[in-house]
Length: 122
Image 1 (cartoon, rainbow, N blue to C red):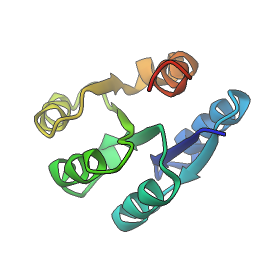
Image 2: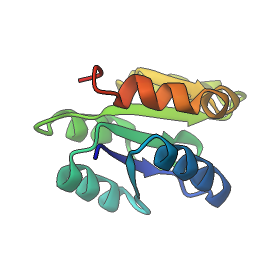
Image 3: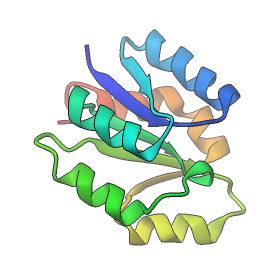
Image 4: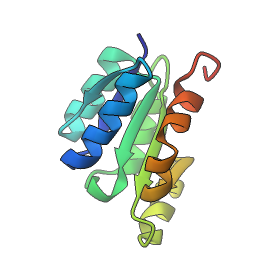
């Protein structure tokens, strides 16, 4: 079963993601800290890493660098509050390509997970 690792501290967002992830047949590991996120990514080799950018207090450039160095680098998919344009730009600068405003992320979550986590995404 394909794995997804997330860093989504908000319980409501996390439960919405978990419900969709399970319905699509993925396994989900939610990391609570930066160290936990890296450890889970190294251990389970996820296809996708999901990040709530508004909850991230760690260096995104360092994270993307470490994730890209993994044997099978995951796709990093993020969501953010649509009003936080600066945060989205910092994420782009850090090398994150898949950024979604929160409303778009949740309204298209199933398609996003299928696109980046499906069998043809590798």
